Length: 557
Image 1 (cartoon, rainbow, N blue to C red):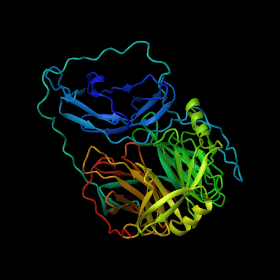
Image 2: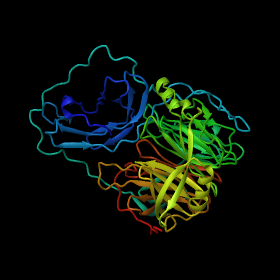
Image 3: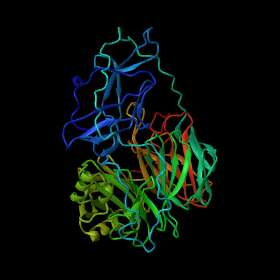
Image 4: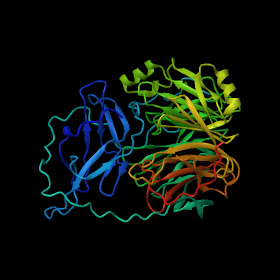
């Protein structure tokens, strides 16, 4: 998102077929983060000829890690199909060549990944101190880069161009699409699925989790699975972190996957808390889990089993639901928290600058949300009509509660994307979209057509910008009642259903996508709770092209 690098600084590079080339750009400045596109095994974007993997960055000189880096630029290349080398060899070329491979807009840049083991106990315990059932993280490949620069420069790449650039693009494979969101034609596992989807149950409350090798987990899968998120691993796999909304033994569990999307492990990461409902990610790759009880707290949990701690996000206590963050200013991240109550104030927490600076210096982020000195403000809105208005953040919790009671009571789902904060309210079935920079908002109803019950947690799936047929989609879960499901809203404001659960008299929750966007995970919460793995039959990711979407009616007022 900064100043583009000129093409002239890059040499031509040859990439042999089926091989990976790592590229990094550095700067001799302690204040600059160097983009090091090391392959994590997770695909950021691709076409039929090339793949670009999610990368990792280092601060100068090979210091702290910054994970989740997405290439933002264009690759100019030709394919060498000469007789001497019949295998297609994509290579990065100057702009004189016609093939252009743009990539999607990068996600918000994380602060850094945890580099040291966090404390094992929160600095302030609930009635019963939480315990971690496992002290060792799952086995995984090293994620850090070497701490020293290589002693010698790499061998120079060939500088000669192919004898003749191809005059036409290679033949592209025929795209066969089968996914039609909103067209609920398929019945499977008690679900009604959109055309082109398939499902399987990967975990059931009170039962052992079955691994891909036939073995079973030591612990039973937790009861009342709720809010969840996916975190990418270093070996191409990932972990699905899931809350438990049990009143007697809540906490957090985690299902681990290999690079093929197969279940390989289940562990409990946090126990002895109550009604862990929603939550959210941090920029540095940990999970925030919210207690939805009187005096509830918010805990930070490492998804790889390295510990947990109590945070300052919920110092005053509350029926906390979900968390989102705005990390556009890396040195001053802000966190937003919803509260599922009639007067549930929406909080904006800003950590102290000293806590953030210390994290930059030490490479340990576990003090950012647990250190004192942060500030909490509360959302206050001023409607100018039934659908638009302005807003500001007040240091007064009373003002925040009064505004919530009047306009956005029982707020639950929250997400941040491109400078806008998305918030759902379940009682009035409303979606608020706040423009954080302009201080204005728009409000629309979610009641007509798509929802049988109340909108709950939400997730934003970034569109694949390599295809003009793809749209940004905001996904909703549904809170309570029969025939709940997962629904979507596109940038035009149209609503449609992805799936419904007529066989389940419970809420949908825990919506998350695998790093490659090919797996959609969702929970039907109780009697008993199930985790579903939803995939497209055509093998494309959920941010890929689809057939025409079947929309629901929409009331904008």
